[in-house]
Image (cartoon, rainbow, N blue to C red; front, side, top):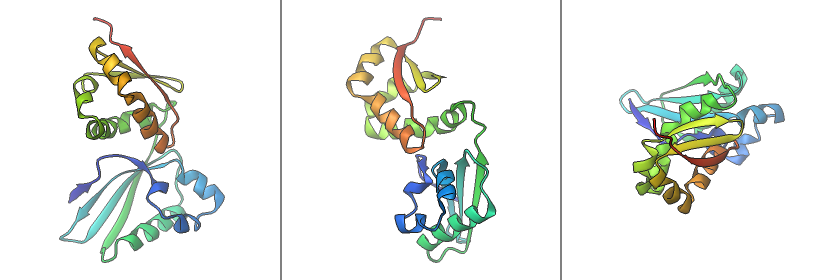
Length: 172
């Protein structure tokens, strides 16, 4: 099975507006906290599996609606299934851990030169503030290129509002 997709996105960005109307307001609220992680496709068996993260337990009814809608976008699919994991979210830590590699791929596609600093960075979450610790030479570069805004927008699309700050790594 081949994997599809490098970045996470909120599932509501994948579902057409007219199809979102099939969900009641409470279900839509839950969907706003569901993240599409990736999918695996087998051309041989015509099977599609999508992987989701959710801050809420999803009912069979919601999962069946998602299956029906997304499979309608993929005619000729033999078997379609959904696997999802509930985020054990310690104030956003779970989402950050799961999304970090996708974020890096996204950043590297937008600003390849940021790779040298972001690969050696580490982060800490303090409430709604994401502190990213980088080498001193990278702080100015990343701020000048407004990488913090790219990161904030990436997480905003996942339903998580963060304020990003670049901090210098301290020598150990």
